[in-house]
Length: 543
Ligand code: C2O
Image 1 (spheres, helix red, strand yellow):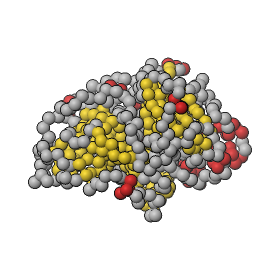
Image 2 (spheres, protein in one colour):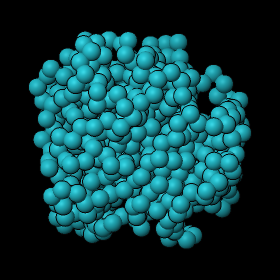
Image 3 (cartoon, helix red, strand yellow):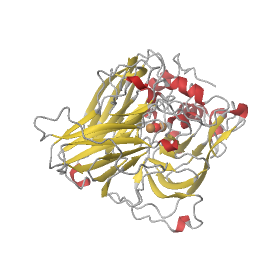
Image 4 (tube, helix red, strand yellow):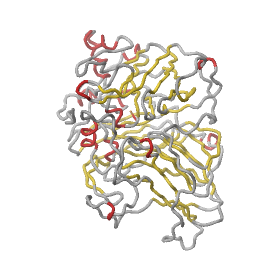
């Protein structure tokens, strides 16, 4: 195992990825952020130097952080934000997992301001876990794209009478690239002379692995490479037996590896299409271009057909309108891990948006709508409470349903607590007209079942537990339900939230405190505590 050192300077920049200038927060001047590529067992050390005007944090999406919960990077849960001018060093070992992950800012919605990047973990057994051999391996990041800073958008979104009308993206990017026509955007400062579509040069007659990551804040994408079929071979870090498709559907925070074969003979350049499922948006954006193209070229083109583009840009098949997950029910992990026959605990979670006090629309898990306690993260409150036996710290966390009603006449913090190793079921019912990609930090869970309407009465007795898909982000469709199960064996406090970043900010976040008995024996590193003593915690956002 190797130690991998990185120094990341986070800065505010003015950048025009698709031609349109916008303020962004980026790492080392790069957008998307630098690729972290390591082997299983390696230790990742990232020194973050915050030269931006806002406080920040970096979360390692999908990484277990086993024994390093305080490196999870979640503001309000595991750390105070890294103030402007401050430094913080993340150090953690990646173990027991491999595949495609990513990282992103976890303070407000900074991920939509540019703080995103890929994280790839290779395993020694990669060759046998990936059942199709491939000649090349690359990352393809898709995302929705906004022209305004998330801070301003969130202020507007959370205003009274907005009725959960999320900020709607203006466009989309592949690997941070697209070309907008500046004439379509008269009210924007725009110069597309340096903008490009993403291009992928692939050797013909070979297999190629493309690791798709949706790092967006709202949009689900449908993706296809014209005239090519592909095999899905990995889902959120779980290698799966190849299953063939011609269209991929990917919700925010999800990852899919596909392997395509460059054996098509009808041309040498093909559109890689990524289209947002705009049907899921509550509002429209007149500046919006819903589709972004990339170009896949076969390297046999001689010379490379630099200016030749595939002909028709029309979507060759019907476009997808449903805001549900890709159907993964037939995908089977290469390494079979049966789910435990029954759960020790079943948590019923009602997911909804409700208009509460002052006509504010808030996201709710049962009666709880989260607001980040920026200056006293849950982990720090817990450790302090345990070490001082100060009831006022721990009492709100001592039951399954923590209570802290400072700001609203509702629960502000829902914490589900377990000691020892337990198996937990989360049965979610969605009473909202949008779909919600739910993400659990620190774990992968088994996706046991999903459906429309209400779960059937016999849902627990009809499950196939032999080898269900394991992932870290799964959607509940509009007015539907999802059942997931996990073994709560990773000590720490872990966020569980909707990965539509706007929804998490609106309150759709709760926490799991697992193996609390072990957490009670921890002391936090001085660097973590130091962050909470710095100025600059206030993100200055309303209401
Ligand atoms: Cu990508 Cu709280 O996570």
